[in-house]
Length: 274
Ligand SMILES: [Zn+2]
Image (cartoon, rainbow, N blue to C red; front, side, top):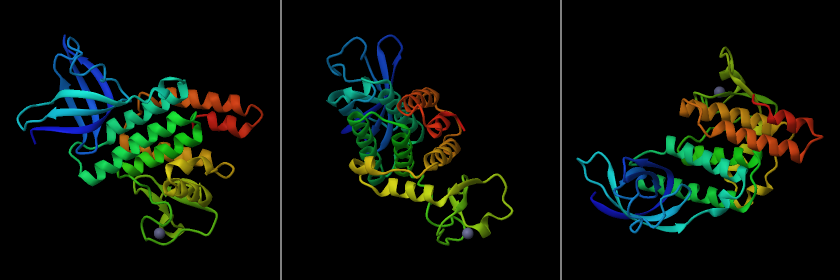
C-alpha cells in the first residue's frame, strides 16, 4: 500500500521534534494508524488546523513497507464534534472512549471489522454530542466499544458448556473466559464475580438496541452497579492497565449523579469505586 485516501478519526496528537506532529488515527480501511505530519507545526496549510482529537477527517496517507511510520500528506476536517468540548462529562467520556480505542483497536485489521469499529466510534461521539452523559450511558458505550473491538462478552449462555442461563437469580461471570457460567461449570472456581441475570439481560439489550434508542433502556435496581463492576473488570482484563482518563471520568460522572439524585443512597453507592 502506498498513497491512499481515507476517512479517519483523530484519537491522539502530539508534537514531535521542532516541526512535526504525530497523530494516532482510527480508519475504516485498516483500523488504527500512526502517522507523522511533517512540518505540521510550521505549515498549517496542508492540515488547516484539522489535527486535533475528536476530529473526523479525510486524510491522504503515504505508507511504505520499509518506512517506520506512515506519512500524513493532507488532512481536511469533515466534522469536529465541538459539543464534546462544551461540558466536562462529554469531554471526559469522549476522551475515555478515544483512549480505549487507541489501546485496543488493531493496526491492519480486517476491512469489514474496521468499518464496523469506525462506525461505532463516530456514532458514539455523536451520541455523546447529543446528550449529557451519565453513568448508564458510559456503561452502555463501554460495552458497545468492547463488542466493536471484538471482545463481546457472552451474556446469555454458559461460556463453557453452552447451556442457556436462567430463568432468574444469580450466576457467576468469568472475566478471563469472557462470559457467564452456569452453576455446574462455576463449581470449584474461586474469585468469580456474582451477577444477577437481570443485569446480564439489560446488557444484552444494550448491545441489541440501535444507538438512538439507548435512552429508553433502564437498568433494574442495583443492576447498573453490577454492570459497572463487571465492565470495569472485563475492560481492565483486556487492557492490562488503568487508562489515564478513567479516574477523571469516574469522578465527573459520579459527582454529576450525586447532584442529580442527592436523596438516593443507591446513587451515592454507585459513585463509590467498587
Ligand atoms: Zn456451563
